[in-house]
Image (tube, helix red, strand yellow):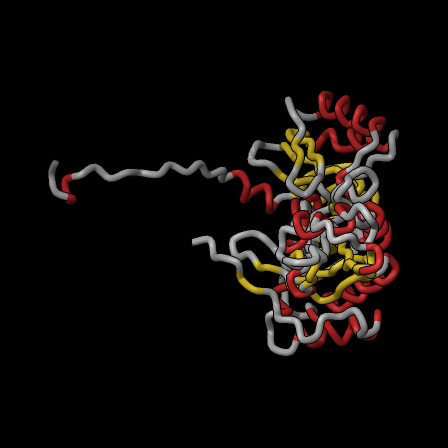
Amino acid sequence: MGDAKTQPKKTMHITVDHNLDEVVKKKVAVSAEISGKNEKGKIDFHELKSGGFIKQRQKDKFTVRLRCPSGRMEVSKLKQVAESAEKFGGKYVHFTVRQSLEIPYVDYHNFAPLIEELKTVGQDVASCGPRVRVPNACGGCEYNPNGLVDAAKISDAVNVKFFGMRTAHKFKSSFSACPIDCMRTTEADLGMMGAVFPKWDEDKCTGCTICASACTEDAIKAHPETGKPIFTPDNCVYCADCIRACPTFSWTADKTGHNMRVGGRHGRHPLGSTMVARFLTDEEALTAIEATIKWYQKAGEGKGRIRIGEILRQEGQMGSLMEALKTAVGPEKLVKNPEPPTETYVSR
């Protein structure tokens, strides 16, 4: 082997589509519904993207993002999407990490006929940009045995009430029905997770120790002599495994609701969200979400494109949000003095 100076250099080849710069600058003629308005004529790239039409690196091709709240789509819609994708798109559709369905390789000349076909089954195009995005959710308690709350129900309500509202940056929400947290609420701008705080009735307890075996969090341990549970609330993650396991119904639900977190995100500089409220009812949850969005709209004024988590890391802003939530839902279920969102790692 020679020295380092005589070794051939390794070259990384990166494909650059110089056409993209021109595409971003130019305007294209379309006839489509963009951001809730029927637009005809010349529309620029950024406005197309905000309406769910995302430019690809291939010339004149776009990916069309469909609106799929809670990750659900009726079979009748799915059939029409498949037919339209086959007619106007490429060889496949794309299921995104946030439960949307995208049709790639759509020529912008075909926006109008594609949208018309999708409208026959009531299927809408989603949106991108600085606004409240389509919420996502797990199956909830409808058919999942682990579900503690109806995550899809609260997600659908958010979709109806808040979808498309303008914010300083994107605002993503996720809803999990239990602490397994399939929807990764810790990584969302706003996340809610179903929770149950258990209550023990000693009179019904036989000391069988099944609850202690079912608890994997060391929140319940069996007394060495009586077998009856010793409960450590600080270790409880509100999963209700003890309630499901108890054969004598001595464990029951004392409080049930949504635990709310704010300020998470993924990307190059991920943030872990922070818990701000526990055991919110459906009504309280929607009130708290509305208060959070309004707070974010006001707090983000004049700060450019900034996520809510970054604002909450600024001095005094965490306390400001908590005051807004206190006004909206009262202090009883709020976390006292929560820490701002924290960096989870840096991608470098």
